[in-house]
Image 1 (cartoon, rainbow, N blue to C red):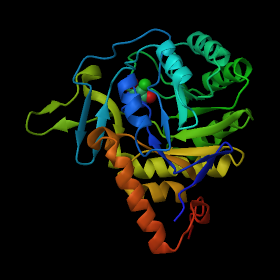
Image 2 (image 1 turned 135 degrees about the vertical axis):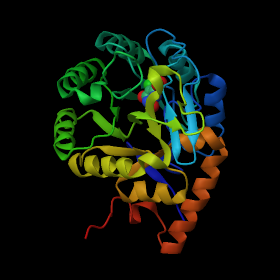
Image 3 (image 1 turned 45 degrees about the vertical axis):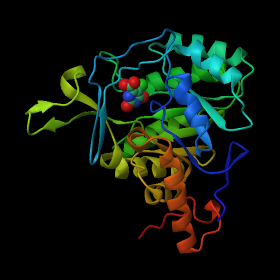
Image 4 (image 1 turned 30 degrees about the vertical axis):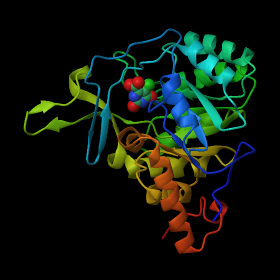
Length: 309
Ligand SMILES: O=C(O)c1[nH]c(=O)[nH]c(=O)c1Cl
C-alpha cells in the first residue's frame, strides 16, 4: 500500500500534517513535528509582532472535540521565517502560516517572506475567529478579494489560504469565485475551527474557556461533516487548485473520508493536541489498513471519488 501524495508537484511520503496552531508555536514544537511521521507541517499563524494571546484557560477538550480562543499567540513572523531559513526542506514540506491583523501587516510580512530564500509554502489565514473586535476576512468576500489581490501582487510564488467553514451553497459559490480569480493561489485549506461555539459544563454551570465569555472555535468530531462538506465543495468548484482537508480527523477513517471528498493532504489538530505526534503513526497505520481492506494500492485510486446517490 503506497501512501505517496503529490502536492504542487512535490512527492510526499504520506498525506498527513498538523493543523496550524497545534504543536507548532515554538522551535521545540516544530522540531517535534519535523521528527514525526507526518510528511508535512505548518507553523502557528503569525503576526507582525509577537503576541501573548488571550487570557487562559483558552483551550478545552471534551470527548467530542475541542474549543479554543487562543487569540493568535505567536513569536512574531521573523521567528518563523528564521525557522524556515534553517529548515531542511528535503526532509519535510514546511508551510508558513500568516495571519496579519491588518492588510498592511500581511503585505509587510509577505514582502519579507518573498525576499527569503526559504521554499516554505505560504498559507494566508483568512479565518481566525478569536481576535476580539476583528471580524474574520473569510466571511467578508470583498475584503478577501482585496487581500488576495495584494498577496497575489506582492508574492510571486504559489500560495494558499486557510478558509473558515461556510454553511450556505451561495457562500461556497461566492468564495470559490474569488479564489478562482488567482491562478497562483494553488491550494485551499478547509476548514478552520467552527467559530464562536459555546461549551458549557453542566456541573459547574460555567463556560470552560475565559476569553469572550466562553465563545470559541470548535474542532474535533463536532466539525467533521462540516469539514468534509467544505473540502468537497471547493474540490468541485476549484478544479485547478489542491484542497487540504482539516477538521475532525481522529483516525484513519476520517483521513480516508477527507481524501475521498477530494483532499490532497489531511491535517490533524485536536487529536494531535490530545495525543501528541504519535497520532500520525496511528492514523497512518489505520489508513493503510483501510486501503488494504478495500484493495486500494494508492491514494489516487480513490481520492476525490466520492459517490453520490
Ligand atoms: O485563536 C487562535 O489563535 C486561532 N484559533 C483557531 O481556531 N483558528 C485560528 O486560525 C487561530 Cl489564529
